[in-house]
Image (cartoon, rainbow, N blue to C red; front, side, top):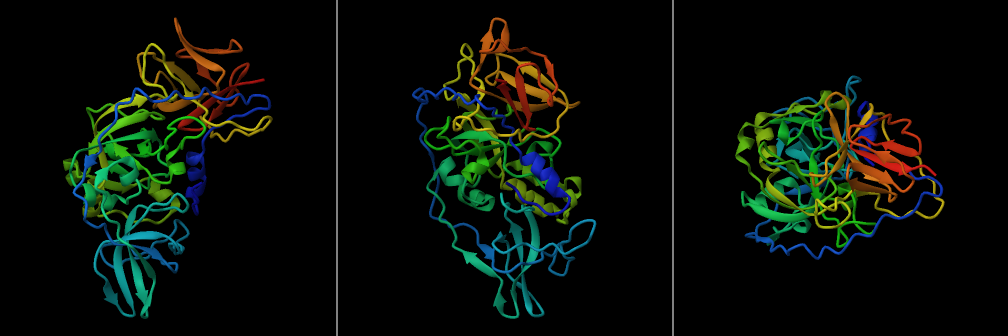
Length: 411
């Protein structure tokens, strides 16, 4: 769970929620994924290797960042109360330059690493590396660059190390897709690098050997590390909840004109307006997708339009367990069914037709003639059907979780 102070906490909690509905007696398991025998093996792209990564450090005392082009800038503060906003002990930063002395303190320019535990992160600032001769930072050993590009070797690296180790080399990696586990602090221009009121970014992560089902790692934040993808115009967006082979690169030429601006005034916190040079560097460090192919659908089978797949609940609860819906308030939900798509069933909501992933209990199947989702109880969902997210429909439980909508059969 993401923790946040101030006005951003409620919105973060809502965006981080994942909708799940489980009712007494409704705990049958989803189908076991089939072995991915149809996946052609991928020879990882070789990297030069041998180089070392950037200098990183961990805070050993709380430090209040200073904002602006130099260490004499204003302190980072919450809004609108104006209280100093320190980074907590244990936060990690990337050191971006040599120390600059100011009185009894030595200041360094840093990039504050994102965290799934504490917010905010992913911004540039100045912090006091030492005070009165006492070190405030504990250095982290520099990584040695990997010799091949895989999701296992690249996802654990900070974005600066990915660019340093891979450069502009085109790489291809196999990974499962999901939504990132953190709320972006900035909106980006061009928008395909990521904006808060647009489609959610898609991340690549390592699901483990199982890839799908109860034994798989199911979400990027569960994996602990992931790679955010950025899909430019002309490339089809990546589907969520699938296992893909993705080709892309760092250091895209569009980074030269890339700019990041605070979204929603920083959600009540006091992070900095970003300098153009920092935005350019940030965009250079992002993974831009050039092409992709789906290897396994959400049921763990190779894609076959004649045998479409639904997103399934991937855990096996203990018999009789009861879980409350962890959803968020949403407008009416419109069911969309198109068997010609590799992800044939989804949900749209709101005036912008926000797209959400539809997750079904094991009682549901997709039928093709005509296209419809049918449960073992006879309950049917059709293309274009509108459902109240708070009330569902007779025999149907709905959990509106934002990017994920869960559907279950009522007992």
